[in-house]
Image (cartoon, rainbow, N blue to C red; front, side, top):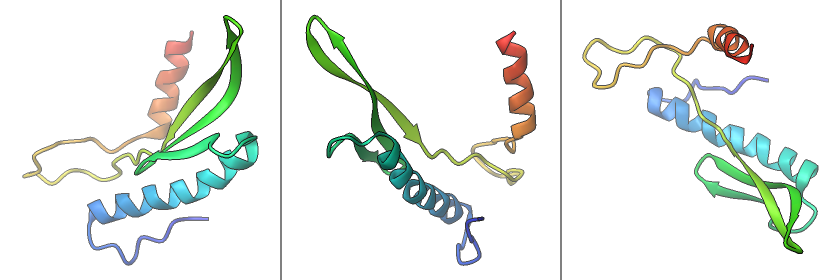
Length: 104
């Protein structure tokens, strides 16, 4: 499945649409995997979901161990020459290779 961007007018709208759709996809998945009680999985930001993934007991008190999943959209095109912020297109293969190098 791919997210349809044809009705988006600009890059900002495209990124917003992707974030919105990813939250819609991730929320039910995280609820299915981790929600034992209502409130274990919550949307805490425009593109962020917090999920209780484990319980820890410290000094006899149960504490929630949470993970925040953030739908962060990486740039995929070259910036305009007059753009204020120059961000190189994201290369997942390069990122994976760099990760393998730092893992050693």
